[in-house]
Every structure is written in structure tokens, then in C-alpha cells.
Length: 263
Image: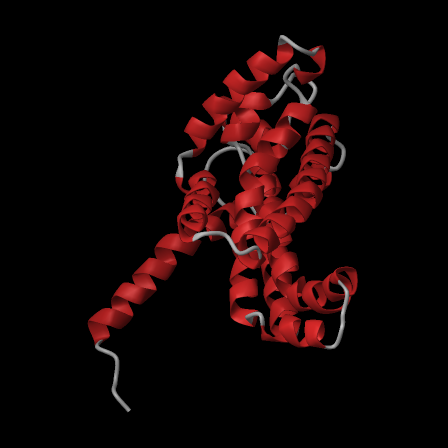
């Protein structure tokens, strides 16, 4: 068995520390009794308890949850349908290449470009209807626009790994299109659909740029609240709120990984 070079081990440990020490520092200061400064004054959970008595934070948390859940449900459905249509329909090579490029665009372009484009699009839509004023509806539509691509990519990778042999065998046994979709395709795709949905949920939960460009006065989310609060000064409540958001994200990622492995 070949031994790892000590330099490689040191670099790996340094990388892990660079990634996780700031997160651990935020968690530690969220239970620090002091309100200002970096001096340790003792362990306390008061900052977490005060979060649940802060109406502004509770409203921001509700907006964040509604935004993430609604956009995830819609984008998961549309992304799954898009993945199946792209992989199972006999597109020509040129069209398939074009669809691949279009699908990857929302993933690779900077969020600021997509957000600016959404501002222009919603400005044009407001000429037709006043329902597209900055607010929760615009935020949901904006999140769906980039979540669909992530869901479709995850589900399509699952489709590619499955191949078409099982579906062809079901067709040979006279399975109808509806039966094939309900009893063969979707059950086999379920791990990919769940993984794509959880990815979309975490992306929506942590998004700032698109939310910032499309939000209204009554639709402040947790990332927007944290940004505004940090500009006034970092307090232990911000540390506690950031730690809770991080903990929820980690739970979702671990749960998705366990579910996919079990399936």
C-alpha cells in the first residue's frame, strides 16, 4: 500500500481548515454570552431564544420557507419533464447539442447577469399587468428560472445511467405510455428527482443576488435580512441565525445523500 506524501496530507488539512473553520467560528460565537467583541464570556443559548421572539426574523423565515418550497415544487416538476423530454425524445444531434447548451446556461452564467435580465423582464411584464410588482411572486419566478436547470441536469444524469433497456422491455410487454411512466420510469428516477429537488431547495434557501433584485418591501428573506443586519454590525443573533441556516442546509444535503444511497 502506497503511503501519502506528508505534503499532500498537510495541504489537505489546510484546505479543510480553510473551508470549515470560519463556519465553526460562527457557530461558536452564536453561543457566546458577550454581545460585542471577540472575548469569550461564557456559554449561552439566549441568542437562539431571542430569534424566536423577533417578529422581523420570523417573517423573513416564513418568506424564505414559502419561496423555497413553492419554487422547488414547480422547478422539480418542470425540470423532471424537461429531462425526460430531452433524453427520451429522438432529437437530432444538432438540436440535442443546442438544448444542452441552453440547459447549461443558467448554471454557468453569473447570478448578477440573470438577476439583471429578470429585472428587465419583469419591467416589461409590469406594462401588461401590475401583478409583477417586486415581491414574492417575482422572487418565486426568478428562483424557478435557475432551479429548473439544476433539477434537469441531475434527473438527466440519472436517466443516462439507467439506459433505455428497461423501458424497452416494458414496451415489449405491452405497457402503455401512462403505465410505463407511473410504474417504471418515475420510480427509477425517484432518487434523482429527490436529489434535484433538494439541490433546488438549498439553492433557493441560500440565494441572495436574485432575491435582492426581485424582492419587495414585504418579501424580505433570511439572506436579505442577514445582509442588511451585517451592514449595521455583526451581533450574536446574526451568528445564531447563520448557524441555523447552515444546519438546515447540512441536514438536507446529508438526508438527500442517504436517501439516494438507500435507493
